[in-house]
Length: 267
Image (cartoon, rainbow, N blue to C red; front, top):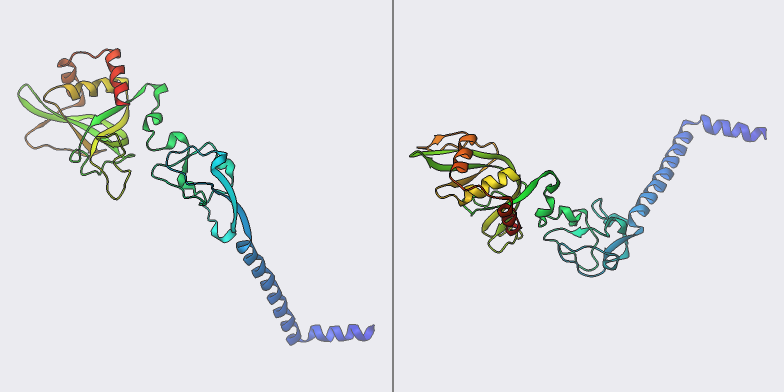
């Protein structure tokens, strides 16, 4: 026994032996660490996939989902891994999910977040209403006004023989841009269609004001990016209050019934 202990002491005291043992231990640790990492990436895991092709704005149900095993390395952070995160939600606008495809986070949205459902985004409980403003490519600055843009509305007209303009409303978030058929102008991002209306939310007071302005002869409404300092040569810049007073003085007051009817048409 003493001889064995003496031999061990000699081995431990030998620097070359200790170095070799250390290298062997490191190699063993690297091997097991590498093996564990490889196994964690190539071992199959089960993920939900589309049971059949699913189109845009479709409410996903259990019948739309099946599971398949895929290598863990192919499942990125943007892949949905549990059907509970899918059922009751909707495919996003312009998204078609092929049969057998995994579900990706940017493909799936809550119903009230679908871009095409802009009316549902309006906070009607706090008195906001949907307004649909007539427009065209020129007025939207060559289709540069898109959903999510914040705009100001300027007004041009003639008051007492003087050409005037001014900022009528400001900080309006555009919720939708539709073409003449009521379709999303940007449904095909590479080839947007010609805009006919932009939709946004305003208070009832501003809803009535804009309705009057659009129906009053001699008034032009100009869309401008939020915060723009618009200057029109040969015209006098007047206050928002002056413009509103002019609109009210030259139009018949709209009743709530007429306003409600127009809201219904806009929707």
